[in-house]
Image (cartoon, rainbow, N blue to C red; front, side, top):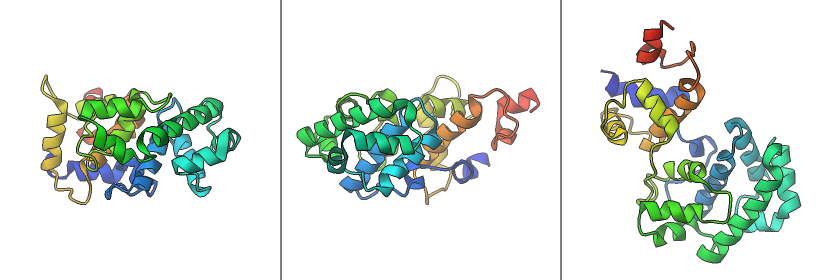
Length: 236
């Protein structure tokens, strides 16, 4: 019974893709929209709160600094000012430097189009390597955030399951034993009847659950507490 409604319920309670939350439309492979999501993923990949990262992205959006060319035109001082206004002060100098290097590399190697990066990739692992090879400052975490929401857009996007999503899936009993947890999640998704969303929404909702609840000890207000074996056994 749970499998029939669980994916939709999880998404509706916790939220789905961050790109959807930001008003970024990825489904049409529009290069501008994909870059906007890439910028958001880069900001989210640092050791900083998601709230601060999203607020900072909105600052870029309000100023129209959301293309490789506009980032270059804004320059280091302008980027630092936007980052500071968003509360991204801990990483403002280094992020401004890295953003300029990343977009410079993207323009030089792929004409500023991330779709070209995807199309030239030989497969999912090469795609990840090319994303992480854009300048400096794009690590495994940033690449995973970006490619997770590109699964239904780019057929070569197939990143590993986020550790946070895996933690949540195991805690609520969706990933058990030694089997491939991704297969278990896809089966739950296929039986969940949530056609208005995508698998990336489901995966991101699990990330949100893992980040905000599962990695914290005995969270009494967890929205999934009634189906979480760990919380039930603890009497929470």
